Amino acid sequence: MNTTAPRLWIKNPLAVFTANDLDAGGGVVVCGDRIAELVPAGGRPQQPCEEVYDAGRHVLLPGLINTHHHFYQTLTRAWGPAADVPLFPWLQNLYPVWARLTPDALELAVEVALAELLLSGCTTAADHHYLFPDGLQDAVDIEASVVRRMGMRATLTRGSMTLGEDDGGLPPRSTVQRADVVLADSERLIREHHEAGAGAVVQIALAPCSPFSVTSEVMKESAALAERHDVRLHTHLAETLDEEDFCREKYGLRTVDYLESVGWLGDRTWLGHGIHFDDAEIARLGAAGTAVAHCPTSNMRLASGTARVLDLEAAGVPVGLGVDGSASNDASNMILEARQAVYLQRLRYGADVPVTRALGWATRGSAAVLGRTDIGQLAPGMQADLAMFTLDGLRFSGSHDPLAALLLCGADRADRVMIGGVWRVVDGAVPGLDVESLAARHSEAARRLVAG
Ligand SMILES: [Zn+2]
Image (cartoon, rainbow, N blue to C red; front, side, top):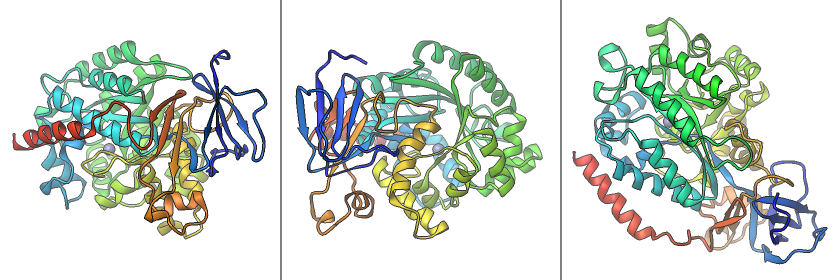
């Protein structure tokens, strides 16, 4: 911790959620890039502070953490042929469009997704990128440069598709790569971009796309590579019953058996969706410490099913939230995703699922899913990643409990966001970002991509 940096007291928030048992009712003290001190309700900082920010209008949360996304899909939001279909035809309609993705379009897509996330209170995002058509070999490098420019944190995954239609997979041949190309590029990206330890800005993980788009060989080799370099593993699993049928027909296995057969059933792995597990599979995932990114909006949009989040957590599975790609949840909004999560889980488990539990999934739970211990909570020594919301405006008028209001009244935009001690959202805007110009350029790129 830089102890010579000025101390900033974010003083007396309207309400605070620390994601742990600590009391920060009097706010937090930030010094350099870390949280130096929590101030109990009615208290004052133990050391003098050079700066004070009066947070009396703000609900204070740890920065929200998104554990599953496909940034490039912001270019294919609400596209007619993919608007009202389930996962497999949705993918088959979109693959040929996505195969035309260019570096310029990707850069705009990443900027849009990150700006949306940031404005919704998100400070760290995972992205699953598995499209590398000719000319787009540097996709993850492009993503890393935008993340750094915007001052966010990200776990960027080197995704892959190696099982094309000709070999019994789902994606067309033009979107798949050879296994040796995937593995060599995975190693290069870890070498060039992965930061280990507290305060990391960019981390790399390895992410073969799904059982129906990658070969077992790439799954196994990726696990070995991840072990060698101590990076995390990510894939889609148990998202739909179609996928379960595919695994049974192609491999003669259920999804978790398949996961285990390729060496992925461990605490290095987090799974996108994780819906269709039976009791025994949930127990095995819990015992292994394999994590799940719950993506409620996407699961409702594609009618994929409802993840058994409370059962997963009871079994010891770390659970976080993901907005998923913007072609299956057309908004990249983390605070709204927490709202969707609490509502969907109430449908499964009953109305006593508290809103704070969903805030926990979006913060501390998501940090655990990404294997991070330096973010996701308000506590001394943690990174100073903060999301602050006001309860101004008609939608909050007449509300009482500020934390409940945040989700129940549908907060959708942060007023202030800090990442590593630096304000990245001020008065509901990203300083220096021309949102209108970005949206105009991005929309044009989206039109061109779909037109072909
Ligand atoms: Zn996904």
